[in-house]
Length: 319
Image (cartoon, rainbow, N blue to C red; front, side, top):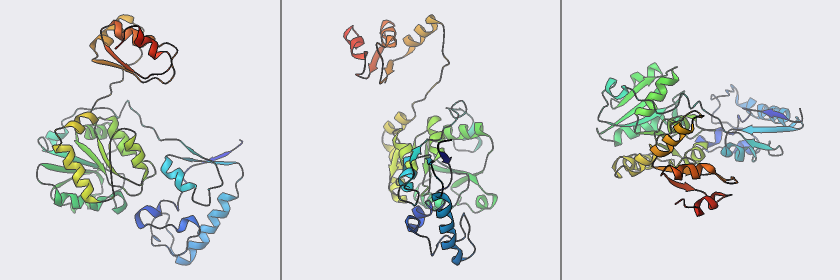
């Protein structure tokens, strides 16, 4: 191999976001997160561990670093790894599972008429925003219901009465149904290298609200969702805005994506063109997109980018 590709070596970088520590840029000494992952049991070992890891990683030649977000790539370029090339490869999800999934979730949990504010995490702790949900529970009235998925048994017992707790589920289909049932997903995490939950719930047709200054921000902004400052009052304003803005943002974000396998039947394709209200073709390169002509011939309005031969298809009568 010309290059060694490494994942998951960003152990010092994530400490900064919650406690605002920047020692990782030069040299770790006193650590306010001594017992957090990766745990260190003696303050005297912090500096030694940092130097051992610096020596190990910077001793590798022809290494390319892979990060799951631009946010983490930018942090990497500020660390002792800055001399190495960095590539961003986003994580992906299975859209055959994470898609709009109707269920009786609201009825089962007595939430039929509630505006559901959903939170999902593999492990719930302060850096994931658990206590921000506790604060939101005091701020939101009884028209809202906060649902948290992934809680431990102990956390479930200690929840405020207006938060519905669900322990971790190993069923992705059940998780997709919960995403679909919610009105909005809130991810108040302050340490996130990518943020799978906003991607999963967006694929299920539910909008999201995330904190800025983590990788969740770039995930949310790419899909027209809401990014707010790391403040619970900003979360509150965004949540109530979704409910009481006349449904504009909510309906926009809840547009569904239905995936249809390729068809070899021109008749079936013509029927699909005809059933649509508008045909969108956001192509960046196309010699002469016949799909525009086909949709127009079936009586469907076409919206396309001014690229390649698309302009010529407009000239022949497409509006």
